[in-house]
Length: 406
Image (cartoon, rainbow, N blue to C red):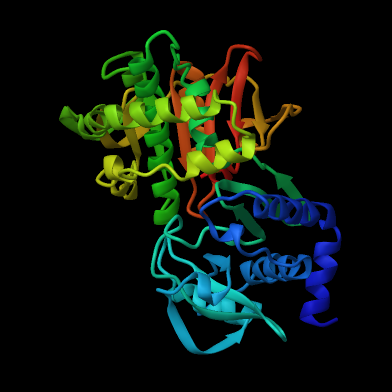
């Protein structure tokens, strides 16, 4: 069987998901959005090839380096400032695995439809959001491809022969889950407090994503405050700061006026009599200084490269790093797994020893002993789990593959 036949065979089990993605692209083309999707929509077979080749490339390596890359399907005229190749090359898994090593994080390998199939024609010169949004396939790990569509990131995740349609989860789904896990109130009666609590969750999610991107792995322990019973489960706290680092907290505070003004404008748009399509177009066309939460935590992410956990409070005070978890040897209540997919799911109970390695199991024991804490665990293969206590189910909840949200 040829590679192309293999791709189509793999995709045949996911035809419905491919059709859903294509239908979303066609719908976006009818809305006057300031994005490439307003002027161009790929054909269904081009979409199949984009995702299929990305999947098979995810299973390859180049000089023992795994393939991780973001691939943007976009005609050349839509990205005038790209690093264009003098001679485009075939879009196949061998070329993707080779070129993935030269594409910087937050940049894209550019692919366009030609008469004889898709071709790799260049590398982007800007990060996502800089003019090449639209349809992208991101090789996240072996056998895992995320498909993003404009503001819907991710829209779908292909993993093995399974597909998770996340659709409207987008880039804020991780923040939404952290808000619930941390039991943060979003008080509608106090708009400033609401915005502060919400943006603290966004920044925390960005920190977790930054550690995923670093590729070393790490753990973030989110604790209620600088002092508390949880300290008894940290031994040693190798690099505890003499005073908490307030940089991230202060960054959020300073950006509150900008975000509050923008949110109020969005609220007015969505309470108007405009159609949903016009509301979306107006929202996306808002101008102003972009909000870059990475600025708040870019100095914190590298701390995860040290053995041990970063410890940070609910309101983003960084207490230190290199924290080793030492809980008393006692039984752990039931742990249940979830996927980062929308809608109701059945809890999947598992034994602690079946939950990841030492890093994951230590984090679960920590949260079991201190129910108001949350642990975000990132493995070296860039998979993220969020562990929290559920009063509703009286058990530990572990959302696996939370990196799909990021």
